[in-house]
Image (cartoon, rainbow, N blue to C red; front, side, top):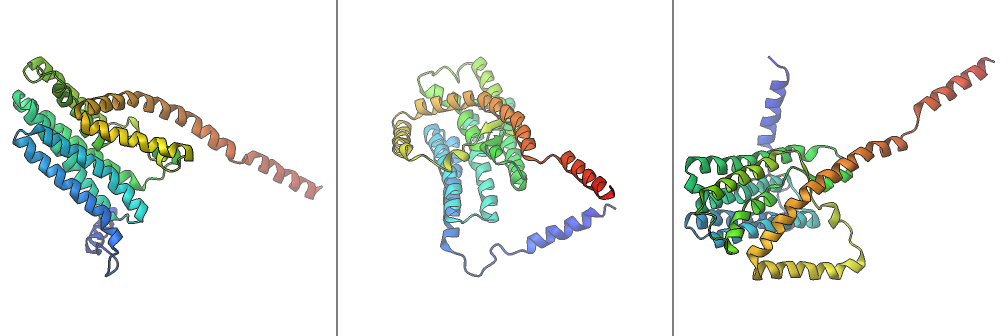
Amino acid sequence: MDPIIPRLERETRRRRRAAMFRQQRVPVRMLVPNFFTLLGLCAGLTSIRMSIEGRYELALGLIVFAALLDGIDGRVARLLKASSRFGAELDSLADFVNFGVAPAFLIFTWGLGDLKSLGWICVMIFALASALRLARFNVAIDDDKPKWQTAYFSGMPTPAAAIVVLLPVYIEHLGFGEIRSSPYVLDVVLVYTLAIAFMMVSTIPTFSGKLLGERISREYVLPLFILAIGVVALLITYPFGTLTGASIIYLATVPMSWRRFRQTLATAPAEGAEKQPAPPHRIVAMRQSDSQKQG
């Protein structure tokens, strides 16, 4: 019997017996990020219901709303210093529902349902890919990486995949009503959905934008506010056109991020090697000193 197995079993039992919170009284600030996570989960579950009822615009809006909340809860947790293991696990479960199951239901009831079992297999692969992507992300949290690698995700993140995979739905609402009526176009949508699922489980580096939010120059603060307000206004006024443009721009940045990652990876070891002292010089110096003592 492998001696590691009993230790793993003891560690699993210890973690199951561990209390959720170490103190009897939990600060209110620890609950704020979880509130945003649960609110996003409610939006994802409601989106599934709207998809079943055929109310695709509302279902799509709820997924976008859940994506916005997903971008808020993590930053709120870091701002309030309220990060916890419980919150991280809850966030992963909510992401699977909001960005794995909800988009799969939407795109299946919207058009891929006409392909019967083949369409169901496609959306099921997409949902499973999101679960695998989140599991890999949770495992890699404790890995020690250089700071520059935190600017990249390994594969496409699930919120971005959920928004991008619905690109055919945006295009149809822009006036192209022949998408669902053409079996050839539905085949293209099926292949496109599988490609996005592959992007999630792949190791292709994509921009994360984490390092961009650390420090902002003072002269860029007001333009950034104006840009954010403009994006929100466009999203409310022209939702499908804005989402179409955002999806195309994001897909265009994937080759750029892959190329930038490889260039940085090629130069990073050389920079690290220059900072390290050269051990042969110390060995030579020690040998010279020994020879001087003998002389």
